Image (cartoon, rainbow, N blue to C red):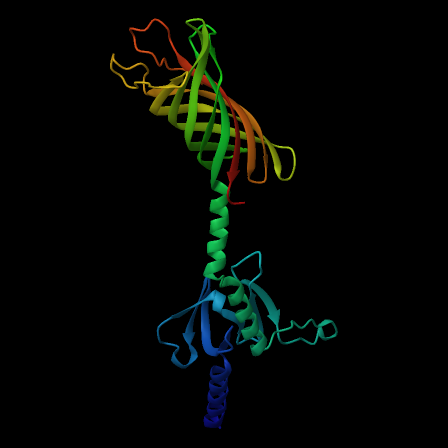
Length: 325
């Protein structure tokens, strides 16, 4: 009799050990029979049911869809758009008699639905390289823009006690625009600038006009502020230094062509280097900028042995177009 009781108890314990297992369902649809030992924020640790005494296995929590525990309860892990880490929702697949009338069953997707959902999420995460490059290019184009400029100069020389008059010239070149926070930008440019002056007087009883033309490579570096007055329209305010190198100086008087000596020696008539300060205002519509500015020369172009001090100054009307959005 005792042997029969022991045999029945042994069979009962064996049956419990056979069915006392956890089942891990992956998002791929695969199921793992296991004994779950730990669930962390990113990992799930378990031992294989067929090798309980074996090593502890580790699987990413994001790869797990649900866990059915040996006591009949279930944990479901889902990924919300706001939280990339899987959240655990506790549910039960069995109902007790006390709450049979108020049972709430959690809807569990099928394996095919799980695979489709994972593939959909993967497609959202796999952004084509072309799209990424386009976004980066758009961001870069907003920070850095390249453009061209053309305009008219009306220049003169300080230092001739009002005897000199304005000379008409042109300017053209390339512009770069680096955006800064709070609607500021830095706008360096590389320009050809036609400057100079003219003087009118009488020589041997006849009217005579002298024109001095100075050809500069000029580098203005302006700090610009854009005051938005519309979705695509801004008022412009700018100031900054400019630097210039005169590579050619010429003059003409009554049909006679003269060459102005430029350099730093005593034999030269004017210094080659120039710098000053510019002020300007304008308006921008999309990438088109129209501006008016004034340059104040701060450097004496005459050598020390000349009594007068000559400085460039002049008005400029410019049109600039910046490429990009």
